[in-house]
Image 1: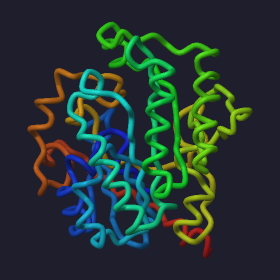
Image 2: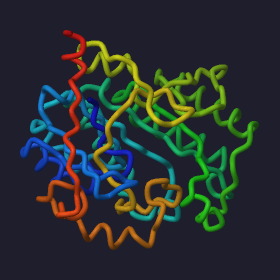
Image 3: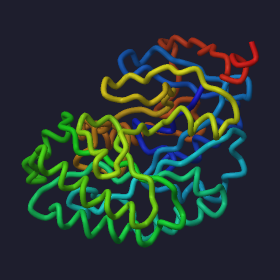
Length: 305
């Protein structure tokens, strides 16, 4: 099993103490987002967990505790060029880039992936703006990473609701290709691999591969044995399957394009439910909850059979 920590909220930034408490406890309880009283209990041991992918905009709260992680892991760190009009509560990007350098030096550049996504356009954030921002990003961190993943903004519920505020317009075919041409050239200059994920737009002519965020070969290299391929849930995505231990509507970043905070009115209230000592991310187990242990053999065990 590969844990995803997390696509639903930024656990490394806001809930890392809880995460390390769950590692120490040896299990984590995860609510089903469609049936909150259905709980999956995941045992956090070598027989069950193959690796962890941390997905975050700010890994700093975890940096001094990396030695406490008993499984192979890698970081996906999102660095975008937006200001507080789009990302109201994201930390200063210079500090994030310093954290990327720290991680690269301590765990290796092959375990640090940068996500420059989503790419959105309005009167402020133009194609020229993205070209300059991407150039600056690559210039500063190219020695410390091996890959950048890009994607274009999707019209999720929350994105649609904030579309007028952001003065956003959906990218058309020509704009995607112009961006691909410019960003691909910059990545080539700095010897950085660049890929899209879950995008139907083919930008291979600009050196941008149609990749996947969670790549089977890269994960096999990380853990040292073969992974039977099982596709994730997104239709245009060829990432391998992961298990997300996060929850929706509880991320403090407040990004206007976010798909996981789809009900902004709930966010403040749900954040208050968090207790770092609880087995679930938000609130506590109740008498109404139904706990089912998620029994899956690690890929290592499957390989040995």
